[in-house]
Image (cartoon, rainbow, N blue to C red; front, top):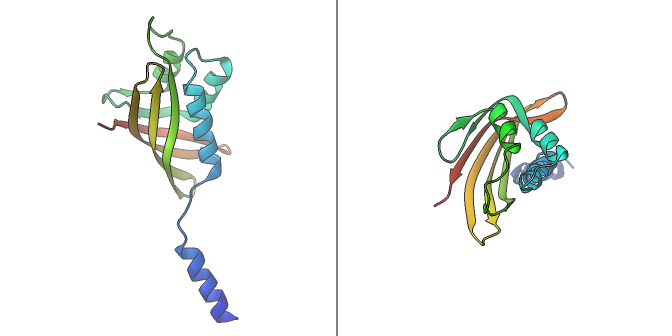
Length: 143
């Protein structure tokens, strides 16, 4: 029986970590909210909970912003003629270290004019008050 337990433990430890379902659901909910061209009160609530008050967000352009900038952008109407966006996350990888999680994924932006943009995003999340919040975010455009 000891050999069987040792073999079972070895097989278990050899399995790849598939990530945390709660974080994946939270990311999917956030991407859905980001896909709305006119954010609702619910979308704003999702953004507010997703990003910590002290988040450092580095855009693909290299500009660094904070939560105030993120939330303010939600109230700015899109310029006339701007195509709408739909976002999805692919190839999501999550590495957890106690109350910290690193989330890396490919962000796919599909515009209503047919354009498709891809980015690699990495977020650092901290568990605070029973919920995960992004404290750092980096977006890099995939050429």
